[in-house]
Image (spheres, helix red, strand yellow):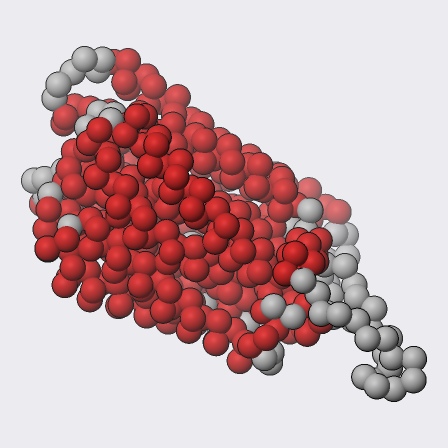
Length: 468
């Protein structure tokens, strides 16, 4: 973020004091946008590619019928739970990288090797659990979790390895890994559709779809890990001042951080359940096909987080700055952009979806439109959550605060869902989730402002968040 002028200014009413009119909302938006790292633009372009590939995958799967789409959505939700449970490995590495700017750097390669080995080991443990669930279950998609078990040791490599680049503020390799995963999956899915062209049986199609998903992402994960190891080695060669003593202390330091890593994992699982619990409720009360149509509404609504996630990833290293003024200022700038952009985009997205979904995916998915309308207000408000969470985790080192906010949203949406989903179906799930998001983000604002030492009006008053 550009350094602001901190020279003394005349007090209001004093000689030489200029009476400047308060900035307009447009000026506030322009100032916030100019303060964000330019890497956000590149990350946004990558996100657009990811969204295009993800929508192509969704269309291919959804056109096989709501039942196939429902099984695919639930399978991906289970995979996401696995990835988020152990996501603390990569975020711990990112925090080490982002907070070493003012200190003698520690070697990156030993730390990266340690977290990658831990990721593979934890993936093997997860494989055993997934195989047990697949053996016990007799319904889709849980009976097919053996496919996820085969890929589990590899799937954890991407969120772990990219922690190196995230902490360094290097967006290009992160963008490449994120785009390559859905691209390889789409290629595999196209082959699966060709193999079963015209098949009327849903089970073989589900198996091929899930196989393409796991194999494509696993291949990209292995390549990403090797690329990260190479970059870490080059970084250590450049940092000739790093001592052997520091290298020897990496392993004890790593083990000492397990509580931090575990807390992040549990927090992210709670956050994921906050996003996906309603999907499981819909499947429980109304079946796999209704869950399939509702999953499309969720996928489209979460497109609003495209910009917010790009902004947060690009600003992540500065949000983790040790100086609370710098970290809070960058967080507020990101929150302004995220909320204003998503509120403006929500009605446009709804209008496009109302026209496009039934035409592109089939008339069965017209049932997803009203749930989408119910979801959008809460999703737009919750766009600020990613930046606030980065402040809690990367600056304060207290990921449990993110877990508490997500837990509040989950509790509200789940309780309301139990009341509304049996009678209203997917629409009730959308209403419940939207209310949970809205209430939780209000609490998140309050927690952030208290730890940052800022008043409420700092969110719309740029002068209060300028740093010297």
